[in-house]
Image (cartoon, rainbow over all chains, first blue to last red):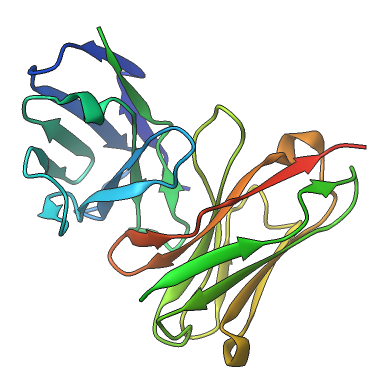
Length: 107
Length: 115
């Protein structure tokens, strides 16, 4: 199975800062990575598909990059509503997997 | 509009079998893949398996021996059955529609495994 390693586990920031969240795959997965945001007691929300493709309705401050094994979700100038948990997911293999998540918290 | 809704028992006894239903609307099961994902309380997301649009299935290797996914296209329903439940199977279970990522999710159903 393809293992996704997210780092850091927790990121403490103040509103207005820009941040980068990392997701590393155990083998090359081209750009078959998707990013999700999950707030407490809610279903996850798709933020970015195929590493860098935007999703309708998602604020433009969210962007993604990477290919192969290293991927990054960037948030330009974090807003208060962004404090939540972020997951990456690969769809390269028919056996999908998620990363363990990065919690973005208020410093 | 597109909707997915999970249903099933909130409480299951240890060693018993869990049966969940994902009822979809707004799309055809023969055109989209439907996945099952679970999340234990306070933990991350775990991909469980998928009903591909062509009727084939794939399962998480760690769950494969206990898990079965099927569907009834006439009723727009996808079913999950998982046997030999243990307390660590306590989780919120989601179904989600796959088309370039999971844009649509169900609200999730909380399942507690306890005697």
